[in-house]
Image (cartoon, rainbow, N blue to C red; front, top):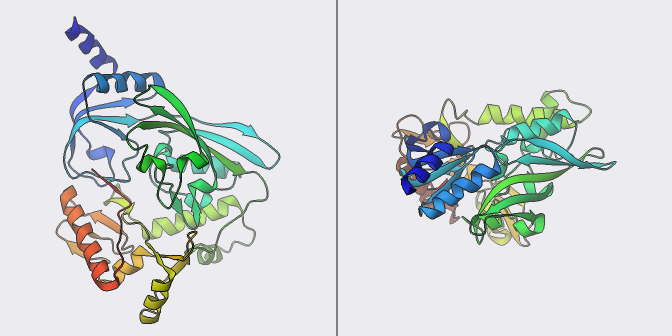
Length: 352
């Protein structure tokens, strides 16, 4: 009887064994999951989680696979989150609340907002990955972070088999940080996010990176949500490699925050060192890409992997690299930067 029940569940969940994850992660690594399934509704999610618990399976939730580095095959169950749907759930004269399922591609949510002239996430155009992963690391770009527009999220608590709502405050957002990287890690599966966007009185941020220069090149006079989104897309496409062509996970390292006193000392020695104000008192944020470039890594190829020629912060798989090849490259870069500047780089990518 147990065999029949298991076989039926196996079929319902469309469970695959020894599934290649080559197309499910953007580094393009030859990695296999012992078991794999894809879920498109919360009911299926509950069934799969129950199966994993009853069979004591190690569990991994996979969205777009754009912020993960596998160093070995995964000896457990991988769940591909394909929950879909974007909807406006509330609005006032000046704001609109938009809810997106966790499996929606982040950039599709940005385009949805841009096409409706809703402001707040245009600076985060073309960030790879799915909406469910966005709050886990508080994604951000060009001076804007998810926490700036985040209202709430819904997440399925694995142990209690119940969906909970997390507010902005409860997510404990930090720079590429959230509660889901710490005390809530591995305990919840995010099913949707809700953002609060502007309908009027947009607060545009154009003073970070190359946005202002790019807008000038585009001969933009009157700023709009779409113009800024187009500028960000243009910048990203000019600097960042397409994962479909060259395996990568975007920015591999976080921009480090150091004591402002130390930054000022380093600035005297390296006058061109860029620094940005940090929300943390007495801290300055340093561009990790600049540090890596000064150490001679930009464009450097080490076997089948290397640092990208246009953006040192991006580690790429030129073909045939293993996760351990890329991890060793990252370790060598970290050691090099610390030896030169006494600044410790931290990976932004999740290493499995």
